[in-house]
Length: 584
Image (cartoon, rainbow, N blue to C red; front, side, top):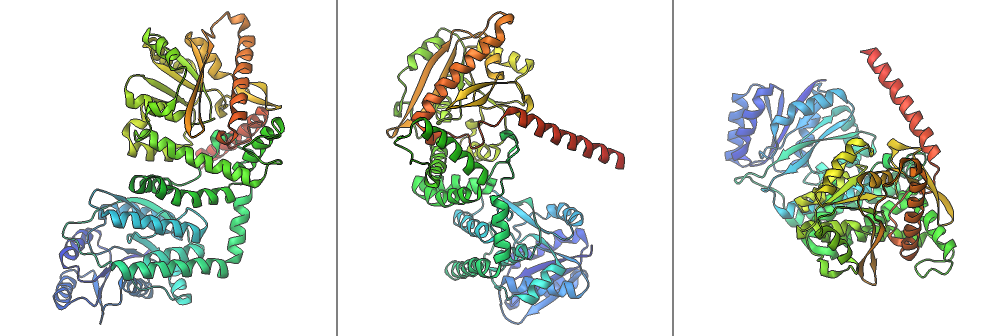
């Protein structure tokens, strides 16, 4: 790989000298493009080019725009025999210490474009930050993917052969629209985009050449051109993409092995829009995204229809569903999930108080805790129990420990933690419910704390350890682990469901058992009875509020199929690992 630097400059007198001093350590050939700067800047650039023999200065007779300057540098580097070019802006915003990592990544993927993924500090202007999210949204539409996480960062390594091919076939914008358009068109051309996190700062003495109205108009026109270009010039790619998205790739996967849909930046966009404009702005951005996931999420969409059909068969005239269940019912199901996510954010931002929640049996649990007793709460993925946990954390009166058997919500939890650092309190991440987990939770219970365990999802690590119970007319696998663990803890057990009803949240707290502990000889029967009671209560509440059922996978899938799938995956992994060790 032959790498050169490309640095566009237009009147950046304050930062360009510092930028070149930092780049000097790398001793890479550099094409410094003077994009029609004033005389004072031009004389400074000439002086710097004389000082550094690795700098080649190229002049534009008048200001053509950043994009034009970058294209001039890239094409000159390609003509001089370089295979790659690292674009660095001249304004001092980029952390040049990340250059070695970018070079190593480019060496390992020479056909890819390596782009910085900005990590901003407090110096970033809020208007610029939020404006980027609008562009992210359109780029995701134009590429039919989330592969481009940031299209506006001017810190990237270009594969020059592919870039020159693009320049010969398309006329690109020459100003602030260039960075976005070149990335989208290279992606259309089949170039892989790889992002590396990099720190970005806005220096106090920095000079910005972003022309608010003019550049926003240019960028809007560019997005219009790209959008219609995607539809008219990329029909084959569009059809192939849609076909791939509609294939149920997760069909044979256990729910906990399904990857989280939605990138971190997409979820952060929704959270930041909530913080900036509240519900109205958040919904304006979130609802189109939900529609996108509804259209492309064949697995979740099929699971939604399957569940709602079971409900409709049990209650043919259910007021919330059509008869028969249609795609519109599933779309409402997806929207209900999005609204519940907003309520979660509301709760963690302390905008939903306990007095806004109907909790008729609250004293029953309060008396238990007042006596110094801990308890187990058996919960489910029906409704919005996260709201109760958030309120309890804000009140600082009840210590709640939540068992988490999956990292599927990692992106959502990362964003939630930024909104409120307390959101990650007392989350206990485990892969299975083993003896060490039991010992840890026993200490929590002895201290008079609550332990929350979901009783409606099996673990991929404990496939086969289930009890089949009738659920909405068909046997479904329920995990043994939560009920075994509740027995080992030897404390009162309650069920809790938090459902939105008539515009308010209602907490359904019910006594389940004084204890699930008992003689070992009758444990299997005791667990089966407990699962039967739990599934009956779950079905009752699910029939009441079916659109708040947030298990978007095949709930009735036989656990034996999961065992076979996991075994095959494990065999493949072991085989691959063995080959890898052998090759070393």
